[in-house]
Length: 119
Image (cartoon, rainbow, N blue to C red; front, side, top):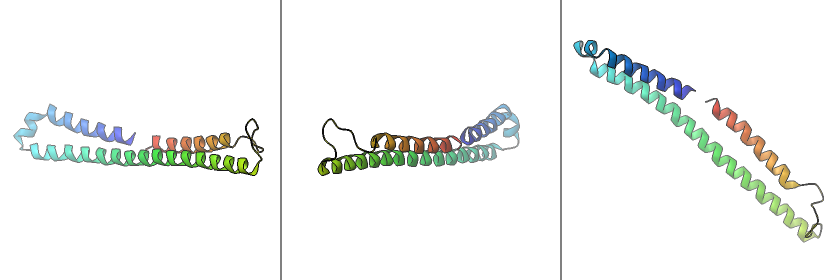
């Protein structure tokens, strides 16, 4: 929302200067008008850049957490097979570890996506 608000301010600045182009030119204010518009665009760019970095960190973190959970489930299943506690056709003795990993990953992703949407 902040990015859209900043872009709206920049657009309002540009519209005001374009609609009053004769007044701006009569007072030789083209450079000032251009600088004001550039400043507003720069502010909106900084906000969008911050949001993009947060989204990239969230996406990367989500992939890392998901892959780590999968590796841990496979490792746990492998140790059960090696110990003879798990074989083809038998379920894991303590429930479904993949379900727990999916729930943990999904809840982390939901919390992060809410914080990114508020930016």
